[in-house]
Length: 402
Ligand code: PEP
Ligand code: CO
Image 1 (cartoon, helix red, strand yellow):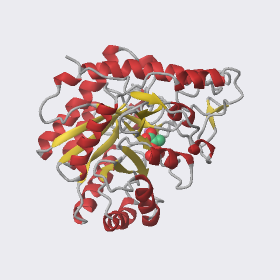
Image 2 (image 1 turned 90 degrees about the vertical axis):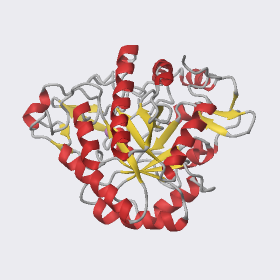
Image 3 (image 1 turned 135 degrees about the vertical axis):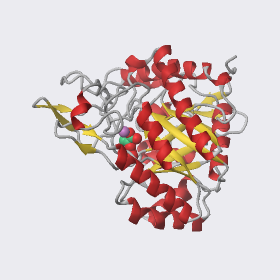
């Protein structure tokens, strides 16, 4: 039986949130929309998508990983699509996560806490406001929470109605994910829970709720939100909002992060030194990681923050194929993840696991295994954003790294 979820235990947050007045990058331009206030009000009154009991369970599982007693996997699409909201597609994704997690459990002999990049992964940061498609300059696609993938100037307008669609899509996906919970096998420690980059402040802030019993604030759009590499500025809104919520949280740590900044992030986001509260998701690239990671690990350890260390060996290794498509080479992904593990272990820390963009179907978006070269990418290149591993490639990464 699926677990019963009590969603009435939260009350709505009443006071204006201080972080909403702080600077933030990568935000949609839609406040002039005539229905904006109505949409925001509807979202602020909506039921939580996840329960605080579930969030606490996820945090406990991450706590074990922080102490070296479990592993962690975060897996899923770079960007989800509203058109993927059906039970068959979601079940396929959940089963794929289970399969990859079982392999990691087998190879490490440890329990694996599983997280899907799903049920809310609808907003994307972009390096440029514009992209050129078939010779036409268009506003960049920013995830279906913000605009349409369709390469058309009107479809690319930022539309706040999409926040409601994202909420509904997330609710449907979470319902289906929960239906799989009772079937967990022993080496998988509960879940899978859901995770996404909490990028669009209007959406995320409207879904913060207070736990009446404890007074804690929870982000109820997901169990595990993370802050992306482009929005982790210390003085900006995302860090401030994350410091106020009680969820387990992640922060991407890229090649330009310095030890002082990462320690400051730890102080702001994990002031009580709680195992499982903060996960650092390292995404430096296969070359830079050799220089940049060790000093950060030492500084965080010296500061006494019991963080979970996981590797995202994909976002620092994106290349452009001759066709113009973005791709990644499985060999590079393995190289970075292996370096990550060795560096962590050399420093006496636990390399808890991986954060991978992976599809549940046999896509051909990354080079390696069944995709011998860049010419083979065109067969099933289906991603809305970054190139994902297919299931066999992902299992190959697990086998090579652990
Ligand atoms: C992502 O995870 O899809 C992403 C945009 O990552 P990053 O913030 O690390 O660039
Ligand atoms: Co991505």
